[in-house]
Image 1 (cartoon, rainbow, N blue to C red):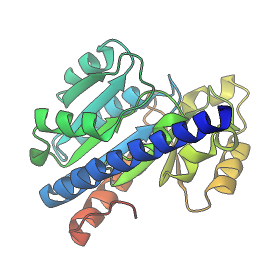
Image 2: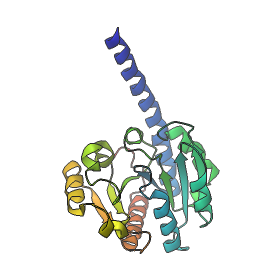
Image 3: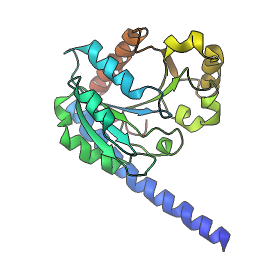
Image 4: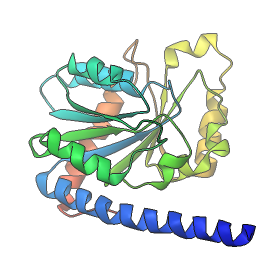
Length: 233
């Protein structure tokens, strides 16, 4: 009986992921046609996703039109923070769900008129486990790791790092004050995903933000040059 129940749960999850992927593929195609880069941001709670977006908005000025879809279990505090910086934003309050799903993102994209934007950041719910399984139509997946966390997060939660194109190590200004081994963090991450691009940043000092913006521009230009959906690639 227990084995049958477990098999049923696995099939339900597979069906859920397949249905999600169909919507994600549609999102990716629509965004590609509009010339809008979608960036899915994964991390543990408090790693600095919203703070990085605030710093990004200050740095780009009017050179890039950016928007954000924010996923949180409760409250719209991140939404209010980004609106102060002129970012077109939509808050998704999941009410307990530990991840965003493609259907949520598809609806939110319509609310911010994504076709008028160059980049839309999808700030996923703070969690390194279940968000990794759900495609949201993104062109690029980024995982954040702060120096206030353990340097071994990548080997503890490998799927988030294995499915990402870039790792952003945040809060580098705290490095002298915390027991974080930056060399080990990089080594562990590349052990999980040898193709991972790794940047170090501080939203407080501004260090690494120019490299972050260059990477965003590179992804945006590559997406427009290819001119086709990159879903699943």
